[in-house]
Image (cartoon, rainbow, N blue to C red; front, side):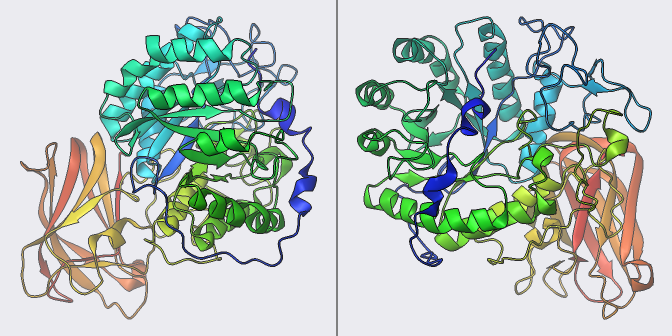
Length: 562
């Protein structure tokens, strides 16, 4: 069984965090060493992609990472996960030995070997501002290798289809013959994926991640010369090399072996690990002062890009505080001037730090399993909440949202959308286009999740249009439009036609011109239904009249499959 980072993180003392550097004195701005690319200035998510189930066709033929004993079905007595995934959007799932869910449904799990699973995960990334997926690749030379190879190919396909970047990130934990085998694996297999337009590039070079050099434990025994040899070899192959390094890399103590600073400085980008280090907002503030700010200064001085971790918190340890813990980290990164972040992790159900869709309450968890749901502290959260929070945190990091210590993301989306977790808003945070806008009321306001911001076209210039890019061709059946809920917005009727396109140039009519009433007494919401459905990547709303103002106006544009 693959060595988990979790097996040694708990042994590392957090005492190094006590090194006082005074008060919170973030710079507020800092220039990255490199210009924006596929990792600099972006939100990257760590993607395990390491789940399999008997019957899915995977070469490993086991309950890979779903149970303690992979040869036996996961159950309360053969459990290794800390949270239960929301699998309602997967077309194929696999029956476990857990009791039924609290709502009576079968307790089934997904497989990363299924293309539809990875397609769905990548769609979630695209819909929620996750720019790049760092696929974790442990030692591929044992029984897991063929399945890992297949998952890599599936992720490539999904990334190409849905407009997300990906790269290979080697986790060298427990890899005995790492120095020679990692080079052979890259040369013989993984480098071929750099031919994909979806493979992440930075400074014109393909990105490769290496996680694990310098950690002070038995699973990472290599001396500085061995580590430097591997880093420099990848750089000689023309790669941009990102290093997942110990939290206290700069000081060479705590979780870091001493004497590795030159190795760390050889990387093009550094990403200090944070899982197991912080568990509440106070911890996050402490690490902001003692790690983030001085780390960023060191990286800047040495021409190295900096990509610190942001994590939602271990659900089983009740760390999440319904999103406040994660938001505090985003805020701290923003006020420090950080340009790039690494989300730890997208699908790490084994450590409970996943942002992927997760059971909302005990009705969606196997009865008697002891697993907690997202509402563990009494606050109801939609299963996609931490995806949406990541999207908003990324917007703040990129300057698209004003820095704020107050979390703007609501745990449950309200406002009449009626999407539900099994029927997500496909337009939320997606790219948009417009015929025009007036003043500051740009198209992005229609998909930002804020009911009070809005798009308004040029006045007295009908027709006008607003368009959303869903990322790939998707079958949809309903659009919900809203205006700000304030009663200051009097009732009005807007005449709207819905058009669809798969190339962004040629459009067909999805729903013909009709008048839609927006009334503050009923939430200023209008629904455009087309039960026959339409499969398009781009949906365009054409406005030809508005009885309340001479322009097209929308504060919320939500698109649903059902």
